[in-house]
Image (cartoon, rainbow, N blue to C red; front, side, top):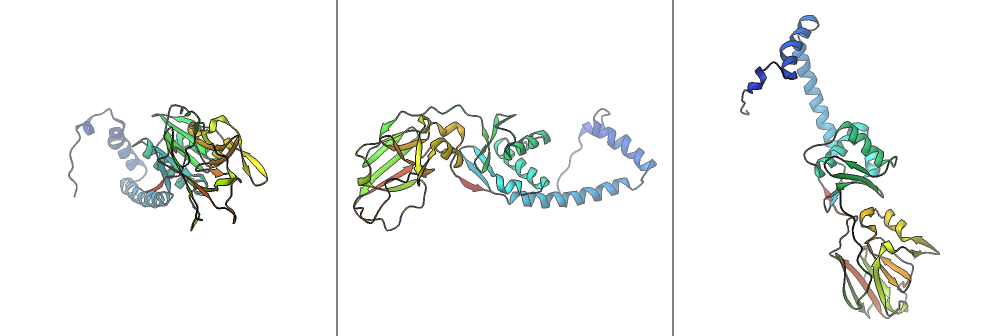
Length: 282
Protein backbone atom coordinates (compact mmCIF):
# COMPACT_ATOMS: atom_id res chain seq x y z
CA UNK A 1 0.00 0.00 0.00
CA UNK A 2 1.05 3.59 -0.51
CA UNK A 3 2.31 5.59 2.49
CA UNK A 4 0.12 8.41 3.70
CA UNK A 5 0.66 11.62 5.63
CA UNK A 6 -1.79 13.79 7.52
CA UNK A 7 -2.04 17.26 5.99
CA UNK A 8 -2.39 19.82 8.83
CA UNK A 9 -4.41 22.02 6.46
CA UNK A 10 -7.21 19.42 6.65
CA UNK A 11 -7.94 20.68 10.18
CA UNK A 12 -8.31 24.32 9.14
CA UNK A 13 -11.78 25.82 8.84
CA UNK A 14 -11.11 28.03 5.79
CA UNK A 15 -10.46 25.68 2.84
CA UNK A 16 -13.61 24.84 0.87
CA UNK A 17 -12.80 21.13 0.79
CA UNK A 18 -12.88 21.09 4.59
CA UNK A 19 -16.25 22.88 4.67
CA UNK A 20 -17.66 20.27 2.26
CA UNK A 21 -16.29 17.35 4.28
CA UNK A 22 -17.15 18.67 7.77
CA UNK A 23 -20.38 20.55 7.18
CA UNK A 24 -22.02 19.91 3.81
CA UNK A 25 -21.72 16.11 3.62
CA UNK A 26 -23.06 15.51 7.14
CA UNK A 27 -26.05 17.76 6.40
CA UNK A 28 -26.81 15.98 3.13
CA UNK A 29 -26.53 12.58 4.84
CA UNK A 30 -28.82 13.70 7.68
CA UNK A 31 -31.52 15.23 5.48
CA UNK A 32 -31.45 13.24 2.22
CA UNK A 33 -29.36 10.08 2.07
CA UNK A 34 -27.57 8.35 4.96
CA UNK A 35 -25.59 6.28 2.43
CA UNK A 36 -24.41 9.33 0.49
CA UNK A 37 -20.68 8.66 0.96
CA UNK A 38 -20.99 5.09 -0.27
CA UNK A 39 -23.01 6.30 -3.25
CA UNK A 40 -20.37 8.88 -4.11
CA UNK A 41 -17.66 6.21 -3.89
CA UNK A 42 -19.57 3.96 -6.29
CA UNK A 43 -20.10 6.86 -8.69
CA UNK A 44 -16.40 7.74 -8.55
CA UNK A 45 -15.46 4.13 -9.36
CA UNK A 46 -17.82 4.06 -12.36
CA UNK A 47 -16.53 7.41 -13.65
CA UNK A 48 -12.91 6.27 -13.20
CA UNK A 49 -13.56 3.25 -15.42
CA UNK A 50 -15.28 5.35 -18.06
CA UNK A 51 -12.48 7.92 -17.95
CA UNK A 52 -9.89 5.17 -18.46
CA UNK A 53 -11.82 3.91 -21.49
CA UNK A 54 -12.07 7.39 -23.03
CA UNK A 55 -8.38 8.04 -22.38
CA UNK A 56 -7.55 4.80 -24.19
CA UNK A 57 -9.59 5.84 -27.24
CA UNK A 58 -7.93 9.27 -27.24
CA UNK A 59 -4.49 7.70 -26.95
CA UNK A 60 -5.06 5.75 -30.16
CA UNK A 61 -5.10 8.97 -32.22
CA UNK A 62 -1.59 9.48 -33.68
CA UNK A 63 0.15 12.75 -32.92
CA UNK A 64 3.06 14.04 -34.99
CA UNK A 65 5.94 15.95 -33.43
CA UNK A 66 8.71 17.93 -35.05
CA UNK A 67 10.88 20.78 -33.80
CA UNK A 68 8.78 21.34 -30.69
CA UNK A 69 5.47 21.31 -32.57
CA UNK A 70 2.73 18.73 -32.02
CA UNK A 71 0.18 18.18 -34.79
CA UNK A 72 -3.17 16.43 -34.63
CA UNK A 73 -4.84 14.98 -37.76
CA UNK A 74 -8.03 17.00 -38.13
CA UNK A 75 -9.93 14.26 -39.97
CA UNK A 76 -9.43 11.80 -37.13
CA UNK A 77 -10.11 14.49 -34.53
CA UNK A 78 -13.46 15.58 -35.95
CA UNK A 79 -14.64 11.98 -36.40
CA UNK A 80 -14.47 11.44 -32.63
CA UNK A 81 -17.24 12.01 -30.06
CA UNK A 82 -16.74 15.25 -28.14
CA UNK A 83 -15.47 13.62 -24.88
CA UNK A 84 -12.76 11.74 -26.76
CA UNK A 85 -11.93 14.69 -29.01
CA UNK A 86 -11.31 16.94 -26.00
CA UNK A 87 -9.05 14.33 -24.43
CA UNK A 88 -6.98 14.26 -27.63
CA UNK A 89 -6.64 18.04 -27.49
CA UNK A 90 -5.66 17.91 -23.82
CA UNK A 91 -3.06 15.26 -24.61
CA UNK A 92 -1.58 17.45 -27.35
CA UNK A 93 -1.55 20.51 -25.10
CA UNK A 94 0.26 18.61 -22.36
CA UNK A 95 3.03 17.76 -24.82
CA UNK A 96 3.70 21.41 -25.69
CA UNK A 97 2.76 22.97 -22.33
CA UNK A 98 3.27 20.34 -19.62
CA UNK A 99 1.58 19.45 -17.42
CA UNK A 100 -1.52 21.60 -17.96
CA UNK A 101 -4.10 20.16 -20.34
CA UNK A 102 -6.02 23.37 -20.95
CA UNK A 103 -9.26 24.95 -19.81
CA UNK A 104 -12.71 24.25 -21.23
CA UNK A 105 -12.59 27.61 -23.03
CA UNK A 106 -9.23 26.76 -24.64
CA UNK A 107 -10.55 23.42 -25.87
CA UNK A 108 -13.54 25.12 -27.48
CA UNK A 109 -11.20 27.60 -29.18
CA UNK A 110 -8.97 24.79 -30.44
CA UNK A 111 -11.99 23.01 -31.92
CA UNK A 112 -12.82 26.26 -33.74
CA UNK A 113 -9.32 26.39 -35.23
CA UNK A 114 -9.56 22.72 -36.26
CA UNK A 115 -12.83 23.16 -38.18
CA UNK A 116 -11.69 26.43 -39.77
CA UNK A 117 -14.12 28.67 -37.90
CA UNK A 118 -11.26 30.82 -36.60
CA UNK A 119 -7.67 31.57 -37.54
CA UNK A 120 -4.45 31.05 -35.59
CA UNK A 121 -4.85 31.16 -31.83
CA UNK A 122 -2.46 32.41 -29.15
CA UNK A 123 -2.81 30.46 -25.89
CA UNK A 124 -1.37 31.08 -22.45
CA UNK A 125 2.14 29.80 -21.88
CA UNK A 126 3.50 30.94 -25.25
CA UNK A 127 1.58 28.35 -27.29
CA UNK A 128 0.30 29.02 -30.81
CA UNK A 129 -2.36 26.87 -32.49
CA UNK A 130 -3.15 26.96 -36.19
CA UNK A 131 -4.55 24.84 -38.99
CA UNK A 132 -1.84 23.54 -41.34
CA UNK A 133 -3.47 21.67 -44.19
CA UNK A 134 -5.01 18.50 -42.72
CA UNK A 135 -3.36 19.05 -39.33
CA UNK A 136 -4.02 21.13 -36.22
CA UNK A 137 -0.58 22.33 -35.11
CA UNK A 138 0.31 23.31 -31.55
CA UNK A 139 3.72 24.73 -30.77
CA UNK A 140 5.70 27.59 -29.28
CA UNK A 141 5.43 31.05 -30.70
CA UNK A 142 8.42 31.72 -32.93
CA UNK A 143 10.03 34.70 -34.56
CA UNK A 144 9.53 35.06 -38.32
CA UNK A 145 12.05 33.12 -40.38
CA UNK A 146 14.39 35.32 -42.44
CA UNK A 147 14.54 33.95 -46.02
CA UNK A 148 18.05 33.13 -47.29
CA UNK A 149 19.33 34.90 -50.39
CA UNK A 150 18.94 33.21 -53.76
CA UNK A 151 21.98 31.25 -54.94
CA UNK A 152 23.16 29.20 -57.89
CA UNK A 153 22.55 25.48 -57.43
CA UNK A 154 25.84 23.63 -57.67
CA UNK A 155 25.55 20.79 -60.23
CA UNK A 156 27.01 18.39 -59.41
CA UNK A 157 27.78 19.21 -55.82
CA UNK A 158 26.30 20.57 -52.61
CA UNK A 159 24.51 23.83 -51.94
CA UNK A 160 23.65 25.37 -48.57
CA UNK A 161 20.45 27.37 -48.42
CA UNK A 162 19.93 28.64 -44.90
CA UNK A 163 19.41 25.52 -42.77
CA UNK A 164 18.78 23.42 -45.86
CA UNK A 165 21.30 21.19 -47.62
CA UNK A 166 20.74 20.39 -51.30
CA UNK A 167 22.86 17.80 -53.09
CA UNK A 168 22.88 17.13 -56.83
CA UNK A 169 24.61 14.58 -59.05
CA UNK A 170 24.35 13.34 -62.65
CA UNK A 171 24.22 9.69 -63.73
CA UNK A 172 24.22 8.16 -67.18
CA UNK A 173 22.46 4.96 -66.18
CA UNK A 174 18.71 4.85 -65.73
CA UNK A 175 17.64 4.45 -62.08
CA UNK A 176 16.69 0.94 -61.04
CA UNK A 177 13.85 2.56 -59.09
CA UNK A 178 12.64 6.13 -58.99
CA UNK A 179 12.49 7.86 -55.59
CA UNK A 180 9.25 7.69 -53.67
CA UNK A 181 10.29 10.43 -51.26
CA UNK A 182 9.13 13.98 -51.90
CA UNK A 183 12.63 15.09 -50.82
CA UNK A 184 14.39 13.48 -53.82
CA UNK A 185 13.71 14.15 -57.52
CA UNK A 186 15.13 12.91 -60.84
CA UNK A 187 15.13 15.02 -64.01
CA UNK A 188 16.25 14.67 -67.60
CA UNK A 189 19.44 16.70 -67.26
CA UNK A 190 19.35 17.81 -70.90
CA UNK A 191 15.86 19.29 -70.52
CA UNK A 192 17.07 21.81 -67.94
CA UNK A 193 19.25 24.84 -68.49
CA UNK A 194 22.93 25.01 -67.59
CA UNK A 195 22.30 27.24 -64.58
CA UNK A 196 19.79 26.32 -61.91
CA UNK A 197 19.06 28.47 -58.89
CA UNK A 198 17.58 27.95 -55.44
CA UNK A 199 15.55 30.81 -54.04
CA UNK A 200 13.06 31.39 -51.23
CA UNK A 201 9.41 30.60 -51.91
CA UNK A 202 8.48 34.01 -50.55
CA UNK A 203 9.51 35.47 -53.91
CA UNK A 204 6.23 34.08 -55.26
CA UNK A 205 5.57 32.50 -58.63
CA UNK A 206 3.83 29.37 -59.85
CA UNK A 207 4.75 25.78 -60.62
CA UNK A 208 3.56 23.94 -63.75
CA UNK A 209 1.20 21.02 -63.09
CA UNK A 210 -0.25 19.11 -66.03
CA UNK A 211 -1.68 21.65 -68.44
CA UNK A 212 -1.96 24.42 -65.86
CA UNK A 213 -0.10 26.15 -63.05
CA UNK A 214 -0.44 26.32 -59.28
CA UNK A 215 0.66 29.13 -56.99
CA UNK A 216 3.67 28.12 -54.92
CA UNK A 217 2.03 29.68 -51.85
CA UNK A 218 -1.04 27.50 -52.39
CA UNK A 219 1.10 24.37 -52.90
CA UNK A 220 2.93 25.03 -49.62
CA UNK A 221 -0.33 25.58 -47.77
CA UNK A 222 -1.83 22.37 -49.19
CA UNK A 223 1.26 20.46 -48.03
CA UNK A 224 0.72 21.69 -44.48
CA UNK A 225 3.79 23.97 -44.34
CA UNK A 226 3.32 26.52 -41.57
CA UNK A 227 3.02 30.19 -42.41
CA UNK A 228 6.10 30.99 -40.34
CA UNK A 229 8.47 29.03 -42.60
CA UNK A 230 6.79 29.30 -46.01
CA UNK A 231 8.65 32.44 -47.07
CA UNK A 232 12.03 30.76 -46.48
CA UNK A 233 11.15 27.42 -48.10
CA UNK A 234 13.55 26.52 -50.95
CA UNK A 235 12.41 26.59 -54.55
CA UNK A 236 14.59 25.22 -57.38
CA UNK A 237 14.21 27.19 -60.62
CA UNK A 238 15.45 26.89 -64.17
CA UNK A 239 15.57 30.53 -65.14
CA UNK A 240 12.12 31.90 -64.30
CA UNK A 241 10.46 28.47 -64.28
CA UNK A 242 10.13 26.61 -60.98
CA UNK A 243 10.98 22.94 -61.43
CA UNK A 244 10.84 21.68 -57.85
CA UNK A 245 9.57 22.69 -54.42
CA UNK A 246 11.30 20.12 -52.16
CA UNK A 247 8.98 18.12 -49.97
CA UNK A 248 5.95 19.65 -51.68
CA UNK A 249 5.73 19.25 -55.48
CA UNK A 250 7.82 18.92 -58.63
CA UNK A 251 6.85 20.56 -61.87
CA UNK A 252 5.67 18.81 -65.02
CA UNK A 253 9.07 19.71 -66.45
CA UNK A 254 12.14 17.62 -67.19
CA UNK A 255 10.41 14.27 -66.90
CA UNK A 256 12.65 11.30 -67.62
CA UNK A 257 11.87 9.73 -71.03
CA UNK A 258 12.96 6.62 -72.89
CA UNK A 259 15.39 8.86 -74.80
CA UNK A 260 16.96 10.27 -71.64
CA UNK A 261 20.71 9.66 -71.43
CA UNK A 262 21.66 11.87 -68.46
CA UNK A 263 19.78 11.79 -65.17
CA UNK A 264 20.00 14.74 -62.82
CA UNK A 265 19.32 13.81 -59.19
CA UNK A 266 18.39 16.35 -56.53
CA UNK A 267 18.17 15.47 -52.86
CA UNK A 268 17.46 17.50 -49.72
CA UNK A 269 18.92 16.47 -46.37
CA UNK A 270 19.38 18.16 -43.02
CA UNK A 271 16.30 20.14 -43.89
CA UNK A 272 14.86 22.88 -41.73
CA UNK A 273 11.32 21.72 -42.46
CA UNK A 274 9.19 23.07 -39.64
CA UNK A 275 6.07 22.06 -41.54
CA UNK A 276 6.99 18.64 -42.88
CA UNK A 277 5.98 15.26 -41.60
CA UNK A 278 7.53 13.91 -38.43
CA UNK A 279 7.19 10.65 -36.54
CA UNK A 280 4.26 9.24 -34.65
CA UNK A 281 4.08 9.88 -30.98
CA UNK A 282 2.66 7.58 -28.41
